[in-house]
Amino acid sequence: MDADTKTISILTQRLAQLKKQRSSWVDTWTDLRDNLLPYHGRPLGSGGASTYNDGQRHDTSIYDGLPLRAMGIAGAGLMSGLTSPSRPWFALTVEDPDLADDYEVREWLSAVQARMMATYARSNIYNCLHHLYLELIAFGGGAVAVYEEFDKVLRGRAYTVGEYWLGLGADGLVDTIYRQYTMTTRQLMTVFGEDKCSDVVRQAMRDNQPDTPISVLNAIEPNDDRIDLGIEFEWRSVYWEADRTDGILGTGGFEMCPVLAPRWHVSSADTYGHGPGHDVLGDAKCLQKISEQVLVALDKTIEPPMVAPGTMKAAMLNTIPGGITYSDDLKDALRPLYQVNFNLADAQAKIVDLRSAVRQGLYNDLFLMLIDVDAGKMTATEVAARQQEKLIMLGPVLERLHNELLEPLIDRTFSILLRAGLLPEAPDVIQGTDLKVDFISPLALAQRAAGLQSISTLVQFAGQVAQAKPDVLDKINFDEAIDVMAESLGTPPRLLNDDRQVQALRQARTQQEQAMQMGQAAQVAAETAKDASGVDLESDNIVSRMVGQGGAAQNG
Image (tube, rainbow, N blue to C red; front, top):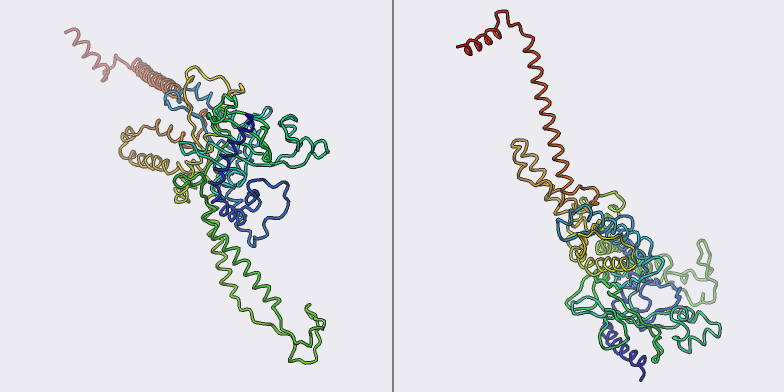
């Protein structure tokens, strides 16, 4: 057995284990797909192989489009609330508060953040994230890969449920992904080269069939000692044709896992997660069932099943409005087989309830307000005040998305930009310091708004008390309150002066006030002297008497 065959054998054995672990999820995912995202998850039920250019309709079981529209709102809301392309959604800082207040450090961190945001805007990362959010909401998890690209620095690849299998590391986080997808023979030849492709691929190209679909497998996993490919990276990547066991298409390596696979909720040590789609699946299916029954009832009411005499079997029946059907015996004329007594009002009321349940389960009310925040129509504080309960429920989910998706995305982006030499040189004082990510998206800010409300309430109360007792303001560290508020609101560092600048401004202001006070005192003294010089000391007046008494005292 040669090295390639042995490697493929080892990878195939692990793939079989991952398939077995995932098998119990497939039926539920298929149900979720059919009711919430009919055009996602095409590989479900096909063993993992992606369907190729499937343009058929997949929504034929949908009678009420509300769940599909609610999913669209949820995906757009999560995109706008977490990673809006139109505004900063993260800020870089350091743990050391003294370094964090250093103006040169803040300027560098701000420049790095701007460079990263520009990189995301140039790439297809935001498109991939939107696709990921839809699958995360519907299926409880999703996956997207972030690769290096020469011209745009980053290139994302969004995966759909059913085409990949996941594995967990010792920390309970996803560190392995096996994927099966389709490439054309021309794509295979372009990416991997003719000598790496199978005889089937080369023959198809010789037969002028460059668009023949070929199933390809890719394994990305920690680079342990089960396989020795000569790759000196923490993660390895191996490609091979699914129908071939004797040749590897290509290999590669990564310093950190390029695949981000967040989960919405995870039970115990499960590999795959549960999401809002699982919560609303029953309501969505019931909504489709009742909507179908309403349509059937209306159809039977308008065109009920009929009873006709045998003598009319060969007759021409005219069922158009105003049409005439002739019969020799009026008693044997056409009549409805039965009366349809369908309570349409009750059915419509139930449909309204189910639609509302689906919207609420998919957080449409909250996500619509987050979209308003992104558009500047509402502040994060207003969102927090109106939807505090839902924001509390989303708290654990938000932390998981930060840990499993956004922080790894930022780390990988920073690493790629650093290796490419696209970041400004860091100040000497920050060399060797770990960076910290603060999330300042509308959803993150709305989560923080509860804490900010306590600061605002305290300051307002202190202002009221200060009207009667002004020295009570000495109790509050207003500088620290401003810093906390600015950090929580994600205020750009350039808008705040650092402590040294504040101290210099205050010293200059104090000196100016002292100079003004001294100038005013000198002016008063001068005016007093001027007034005194104009007094008549020869006449008998109070001033001459005072001067005389002073002179007498001195002479005595």
